[in-house]
Image 1: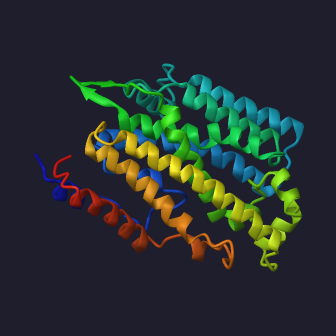
Image 2: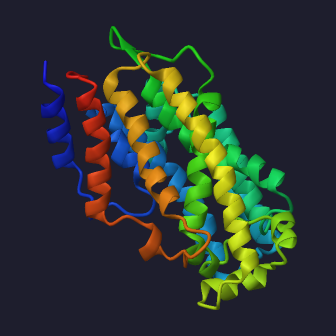
Length: 316
């Protein structure tokens, strides 16, 4: 059996931190699994990313979709989700996704929740309340996160994959919301320039802000106190979910094969680094300020691994 150091060193050599971009944390963490389970994560991530990008790319041109466009995009998303798991031999993309779902016994409700949030994106421009936003995260963030956690928690027995005895969506939720809040702050300027706004109306109003003011800030205008108050509140809320994620990770200690537990720690630590860089008092909230470089990302992963080494988990 390979030693912990051997597996980790081999895995780190496989990861090209300079080529990964656009929210790669899931794929960095999943790379520490066996190849077939990693390929399952990559396949599902690519499928969900394609749908999300299709909508975001359209909104980057013009925020509001026409009634006809809304129907076309909604029908397209729903039809793609409805085809999952079906025998589609003439469509290589759907065949790969469906084969992955069937082999790894991924629950369909993760995809239904995801589709519901994508349809919300198509038919709405932002959120009225923070509660609306949290409901949206159930699909947009917790959908993909639940797939990741499901793959982490699967037991491989006698050539078959056995689902974890627990509520995967509940396990995934705190880290899903924590990471989503963090990456909304991380991507604030880029999102605004692409006509995407994840700050709900009730929180904007409370801080005397408007959607137009957010766009001005993203374009380089002076940051007003209200925006710093908003990000202070978002970081505080993220801190609550950070604590819940730490409790969740503690509850899973000893229940998973170490390499899968390690991947959960890695994805959390990667977002934790960004969280700790958020400075509501003096920050400018640019990508240069908040996004770790490829070399820094590699060091975060290595630091997480060193914790396992210190805990003397020697085989995976």
